[in-house]
Amino acid sequence: MSRRAFLATSGVVAAGGTTLLGATSKVKPLFGANRKPVSARPKIGRDTVILFQGDSITDAGRSREKAGVANDQQQLGGGYAAMAAAGLLIDHVEQGLKVYNRGISGHKVFQLAERWDADCIKLAPNILSILIGVNDYWHTLGGGYKGTVEVYEKDYRALIDQTLEKLPGVAIVICEPFVLRCGAVNDKWFPEFDKYRAAARRVAETYKATFVPFQLAFDQATKYAPAEHWAKDGVHPSPAGAALMAHAWLGAVAG
Image (cartoon, rainbow, N blue to C red):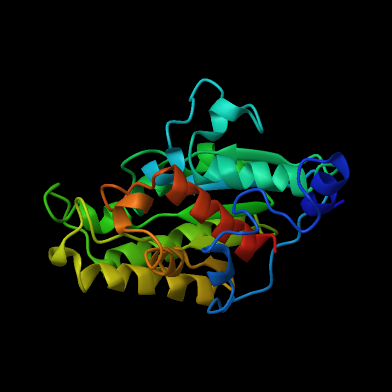
């Protein structure tokens, strides 16, 4: 049973409604018009394990103590991963999905690799969603990190290679790193940061991963509300920004 049908029959919303972005939302129609998936959507079936990985945007204050408890509200954090998980768990209410969040604030690709066995391989996800890249650039501006976009892409490819070697059946979702021009984000970020976005897309294309175009979503959304509405510091999404991300993720991954 689909989420829409479930909610309609349960009386939560009228048929044709939606939970993350309402039927009257000005932002909702923007999704899909310019999205060009680089692969087919992952198959979501019974007992599917879904893992969200990344940095602080994914972490969103998640509980480490509840890290092993699938679908737990505290374990999922307070960001887009939790909101996307909620959509999945309603859309596939009879499927027994297990959703985990293992994002860690401040991390870059090489730090994901350092904890990959414990925080990915051991969970044996059927669907692995990765959002990483903003720190790989941001920390070069004042954090003492000496990485380059070439290092980012090389490390990213090595991480995917390692994952596919150990989990050959996993479906991979590559999320586009993004920023908004406000707060900590100024002209110094560009055009260099755009190279990281392009690198993430190349990785998705190479491995035929599903690609989630977060930058497109935010660029379109700023036509209706200022950048600060979506991410006050230009990097970490507000509740509205997190909901926008969840909607974009579900659209790209789950349809």
